Length: 459
Figure 1 (tube, one colour):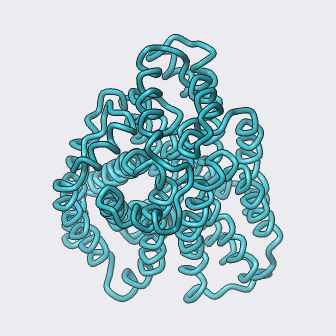
Figure 2 (spheres, helix red, strand yellow):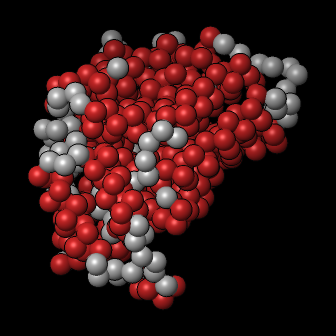
């Protein structure tokens, strides 16, 4: 297992480490299942278009089957973000897991497009919950050194889940695949039931004894951990365990909340509008259009999936050594360059350059996956403690609203204006986001969550 391998490298294997890995593994399994939601339509649509017993309209249903989950993700993030601030990170994830299973079972038995879209909506809401709460939960239980590693692992699990559903849907009937993808979330639920609630959430809610016990359970009694705990407890003395409506409103409109929120929204805007996530939904169609059907689109989709997993795995393995702010900005700049190269290839179609173009496309996908991992690693860190769930929920919600628009508009843009216009829009938006993030994005490497919050408060 990758998680155990990494910890053998960076830590002595101990009971404390195993407890954190157990909690992380439950979130990874949730994210693995969630990744199947992203990639499902890439294998679903080709199958149901060929099914004479399933009523389907290509011109109308393609974009809605794909994008309905994205719209639901946006609402799922906000709703569960509020619930996780009120009732806890762990308990909210445990409540969401059964709904995810119900959504997939509904799709497995769907006999019409309405029930299929309903299942997509339910699983989309659950994806939004798992993605945003998982990042917050792991960020709150991990020490500052290993926190990026844990947060990158969620992106790797999502990417692996997309690859997993593409393989299942490529070789099995899509209804059978719906049942199989429930298994990771069921296993994750069992593991999550064995671990404790986020210690920082417990402390912020005024449950000092339980929070201190959970903090020690996850982090041990070493000097660094105890110093961090003392700092959190000291800060908590001046805070009420529950915010009144007026206090919550003032906190939500304070600079210490609005600035990280603006940063997170620009991060997600750049990630969603660079076009990489769209490949998960329309992989075979996009690859066929980009390369004019010269290569098998299904095999290219699987190769693309492997490259995505490889890219995020590199990020995961070297997370301890990467300066994340600098890495994000460099990856953004290189993505713009690669998009320009792809536009030039499609426009001029030079003979004998198909494999160079494929390599550039795979590099574009790899960098996009690295950007997604970096983006989510910041989301669980930059918001103030009492509104961390809400902030993560709103920023992830804005991300999925953008993804909904992008997924819905992509086939229309390609059909009406061509693939070159689509890639040009991706390049311009990515370049604009790069400029804004150069100003807004903070350095968080090696800092505790309390130190990051203090920096925003001081500024």
